[in-house]
Length: 104
Image (cartoon, rainbow, N blue to C red; front, side):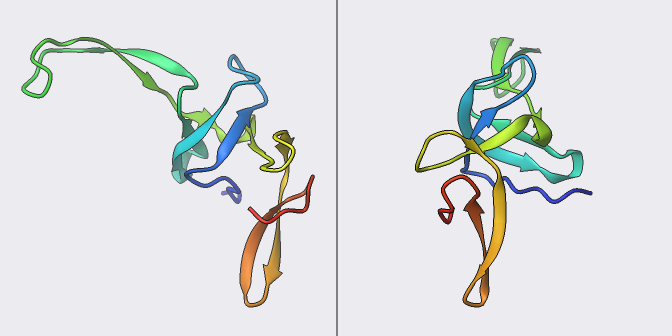
């Protein structure tokens, strides 16, 4: 299993696939599948049957997971896609942007 450098709440940019260039906030990271759900990106139509929670049923739009390899973290300083590095700051291990060298 590869090391996932993206966490929930990070702003990411899609760098490959149908939604290339789209940006959004990570809602959830699915570690088992190396995927992440990004807010407002990769929307799919889910057909639902009528149920107690949704008596009407119908078509619901929701985000589908995107593979981590197709995402890049957005640098908070330059607002461009960047790689992530790790360094120790005191006794803690922190993530930093390789473009601006700023701690994330």
